[in-house]
Image (tube, rainbow, N blue to C red; front, side):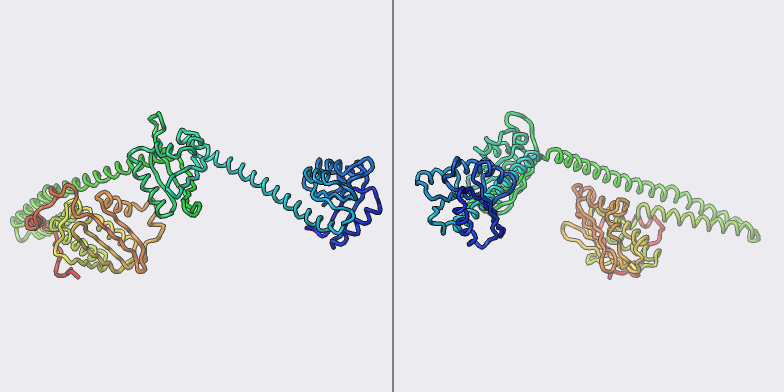
Amino acid sequence: MSNELHILLVEDSPDDAELVKQELLHAGRDLILQRVDSAAGMSEALAHRTWDMVISDYNLPGFSGTEALELLRAQSAYIPFIVVSGRIGEEEAVALMQSGADDYVMKDRLARLVPAVERSLREAQNRLESRAAQLALRESEALFKAIVSNMPGMVFQLEFDADGSPMFTYVSDGCLALFGAPAKLLRQDAHAVFERILPEDLRSFSESMKDAYRRRSNWNWEGRIRLAGTNEIKWVDLRSRSRLHNHSGMCWEGIISNITQNKIADLEIRRSREELGRLSAHVESVKEQERSRIAREIHDDLGGTLTAIKIMLMRLGKGLAPEAKEEQERLRSTEALLDSAMEVTRRIATELRPGILDLGILAAIEWQAAEFEKRMDISCQVTCAYKEIRLDNKISIALFRIFQETLTNIAKHAGATRVEVELETDEDEVMLQVHDNGHGIADEDLVKPQSFGILGMQERARNLGGEASVRRTRSGTAVKLRLPRFTGDATEDLVDDEQLLLFGRAIHALTPARKPDIKKMGRT
């Protein structure tokens, strides 16, 4: 409170007014006092200044303390009003207090005035603060109701008593649009919400609620509801926070939102991804089949034709006379061109479908590592604890192609001088890790949409039920691939180890391509 004290004194006796003033000075404040003795004077004083208190005599000529109180309360309900009178009956004093007077003091006991003034000022301040708090509370409640009424969902407060009985103590008006039920019904019976949950989702709802109740934790759930009397089904999302209630029960406060459109969109996206995955897998399968067909045609038709041409050239060479130097030189040039064409043919056929892949994935990986080392002059070491790893044909091809793509990326972007390859397996999965000592892939390259090589590896692995990851390390870049060893059509793809080895050797014998020097490559 301020040190200044503004007092409006309603008193017709100057002597009594002076006694009141002297007594008020004992309060130790800077006193600003104005005396009036009529209703008109009091009205004018109230209109022109703000007063901390009104002190009034009870009996004035043509004016009374009761009338002064009514005049004050007509303008302010919070300014304290104290009656100071020489004579006032008990009934009149009680009537004044009931009408809104704060206190009364007898003129022959003015020593009570200062304590009465201080107490009345404190009570008036408390009334003002209480009034301000009530106004703020009403404004806050109005704002809260406005917010929750416009939220796309149902805001709720759900309490669980000590016996575990649920009860909605608050439900916003959004429940009508969401559940088709008014707030009053849900507050009366919480099971009106639970009964709208689809039977196939009711178990997960109950388990999530019981788990949250048991662990005294936040309660979150997602499921479907059916509006009563209709076939309309909605997806809803419940999110709430927990707190203890009455030291024994639990209370959750949160919101239930309608996520039907988001769920439909999510299901459509998931369905589209599955369709794209199947299409991608089909494209890869068709691509491999086409590569195999082209490789066979190149090897069988074009390779056979070139071989026949070479045989004919050799026969022509035998028929030339020794002195036909120029013709012999032309023949040797033609044979050289033919050898180059045959080498290119073998290389293209091998790249389309390496015949060594039929010898097993380990042999294919070692061969590709040796080719990469020879072509790029980058050390490439392969480590595997097994002599051979049996895989489905689809898995073997996918693993080999991903390994090829990894080496291509290293050659283009890594700036590496060493590549380490590790091939592992267990009963169910095969794992391939490739680590280079280059400058490391940039973070933005890992997520940019144009990283088709990485995206292709990940999509190929995902279509087969595996996963591929690329990450930057302290010493370069690491690619980790995990694939199942067998697919659903494993019986069609798997062959006996001995049959596989014999078949691979037979195919390889028909192709006069360069074979990897296993001793030179080694297995570290």
